[in-house]
Image (tube, rainbow, N blue to C red; front, side):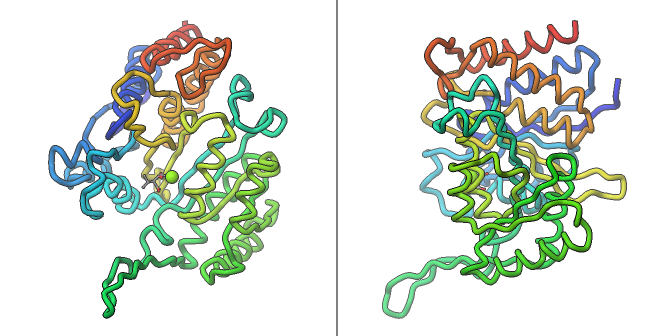
Length: 370
Ligand code: IPM
Ligand code: MG
């Protein structure tokens, strides 16, 4: 059995815990089958951490995250904590993890499962076979730029400020990830910014082009303005292979891309840091969906994005393509069997709970290894 992999689970808020519970079942199953050994720890983040410690990410939790080989996070946030001061809102816990762990590259695949082609709001021919990868810069840009804040002007009115900043280094390191992913895919990268209105966009475009010409000339590089990219994503998403973009545009475009696949409930993501001398990267995996407080605790949530995040963890943190394929294959077959959680329910299919979806994935996993 491979040596133990240190995994920190941060279920968080809303539907996070019930989705992460299905991941725990799969990890336990992998351990019991002798496929992989995991040292699993669990801790609080977001609103759950605020309730327990008064802060959305305790220092001790951050220390555990830094020491882990991989972190899997469920979701953060909910109406209960909406009124809190900005600095201790649940979302700050997630942003702090990203920033402190220096997870600058956020990989958000948008892959349309065959069984869900008709669940998309777009026509089947537009999304069938869709497989794109959005690489979102995650630790810079307007999310973290200074100055920021809300100030009161002499006349008593107020002014809100955020700052978009990018340095050459920040652009190069995320673009490198995109080019390297493209090299294993269809060898095409589309770099997205708004160089027509933003200087940071001009720099982004120039630096991505320079890096390409110097190191990745065998990859096809194109550039696109972010507004056009939003339009192209719903018009003809299959034109894209890898998209690389900044933090804010990546946030928006990845939600749009998510809907192409039928449901936000299906999309995993990986946030990766720089490789150390041994080639290991700090990494956090999370479903793209949020905490969905309206259905939390009702056993209605779709756990598949969380399970697919586990597959990404196996692939990117543990170089375990076999394990990742097993989980992804089990998810695809459960969908082929017609099982659907409410968010992807369609006529003629069988609606199941979160737990029942987990059961079905475990059954499928078992059937492949027996
Ligand atoms: C995401 C989310 C986060 C973001 C929130 C929860 C802070 O929307 O991961 O896309 O804006 O990055
Ligand atoms: Mg988002």
